[in-house]
Image (cartoon, rainbow, N blue to C red):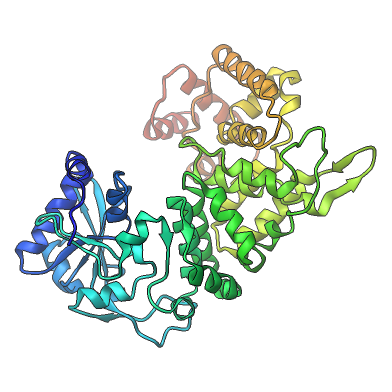
Length: 451
């Protein structure tokens, strides 16, 4: 048993999340069950960082956890997981489990509950994810030697690497993400197994692939994992649309960073906390159409690559079972990311169309990332657009959000599509500007009086 540094413990318990997680664990321990913080939270604390999230492993069965926390989310109870909310924080509580060799590598392994913490540790993927810490007694248990590996920033499978992968191919993506998360290195046997079995990732569902990809893109250094995707053969298996971008040359005068793939990595390395998941996905795929549109004329050109990239991205996201509304948004961002140069010369009416668009700020973010991923990075145009955008909004206050749609008006009043509906909506909009109507209820009452 080894202690976690006192300053790390003191820091976590001064946070609302740490205090809430302590109380959840205390409730379980006081009821006679084991309860340990495990995985990323313990790893973060050993590295002197505050945990981003806190997961717990326990000897209590799901039904026993549900009894302790009646308002919990038990939708994954059959898989051994119960989600508990406490003081505004979410915690995943997982019953000790052991491996079931019947897994086909595509679906999460079937569940066999256990009362043995060591068996629970042996079923986990990496040694540095199998370190347990009791927040009440402050004991640390390390059945798989993860603490030593963590000191070397070593990402290492527990047990036989190929067997761990064949048991659940998603572990390939998790190990890549883990290396990127700690800026670490692979144990040699782990590296060889990842490379030899990379093709198995193609058997995973689109939903699981997208989930891991988004987690990777949310990290501080996602470019580490993306480069591993290419080197290990993972990109070829699950992201062929990005895999082909390596070796696609760009105009030397404008892209000192190198080919399209290098540009993508540099863009990913420029992500900040301000960039949401949709912008990050759009940034990752924004130039994937360059592989299809490459041409050497007076110089290297990629005519219409934005539109081609958007179409390719839509197909990828559909394959990943992404909701249509999200596909439409990300595709829109990619389609329009090359249009910025024309905005300042537009009429006020056309500027309003763009500057009031609900996704315009994210389009600006994508434009910024595209520049940040280019060497030399010239933000002059970006800054001029931001200045024009701010000036326009100061002179033209953003119009109020529509309280009723045309369809709602037609349904309420029994009207067919036509000019009368337009006149009613215009009248409602003007009343909103005058602040005579501010709620949906008031809007309904207003249009009833107009008929």
